[in-house]
Image 1 (cartoon, rainbow, N blue to C red):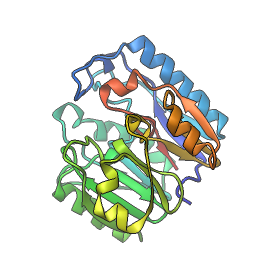
Image 2 (spheres, one colour):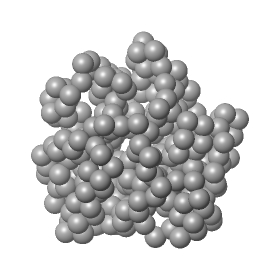
Image 3 (tube, one colour):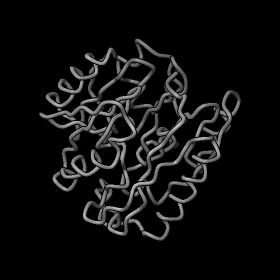
Image 4 (cartoon, rainbow, N blue to C red):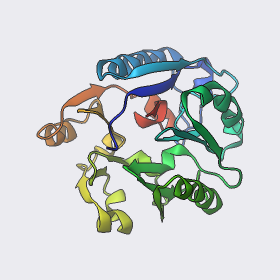
Length: 255
């Protein structure tokens, strides 16, 4: 199942995250990031995952977000290609750090594609074209995934949504949590049961299902009330991390 995990890769937070990419032009405080990140690790331990910690990379401000330069699938890891020049070297470093965890390592050689634009549901992948993922990168990743036995669909992320998963997440094998913007994506409407977030609580969209728990950003009362009827929720504060357009899935690689 999509949400059955045993292991997680997480990178220790770097002080240079204060200079991370931010569509809001905000600069988070490292001390608060470190506190949120520490709590994130504790929750990962609480839900039963084996924690594999990578060292900090001060020269790459956004390197705490390990989901963007790599994608796990079964016993395979695919090294991706983030678009922003400030992140271009992350793939070369992380491939050396994590190769021993997997049986097979593959690479997207051409085009740009980031993990934040990839939604995995069982053996199927939805790749969203965005400002960070272009058609060439998506097609090259699609070819790799097909060779590994997966199926893939490529669709367009709404123009004013940074990453495909910025405003959606898989809750179950056929259920996706979406913002009102993502609820209008034809592919999602046609193929999945969608649970639309209350207006004003779009920040809860990047939830993270792990085994029998649903990790949910803290502070979204209506969303928590709605989802707690079916899911066992653990709330995690990510207010500071959100200043650099990040959420719960961005900070880890799970398999």
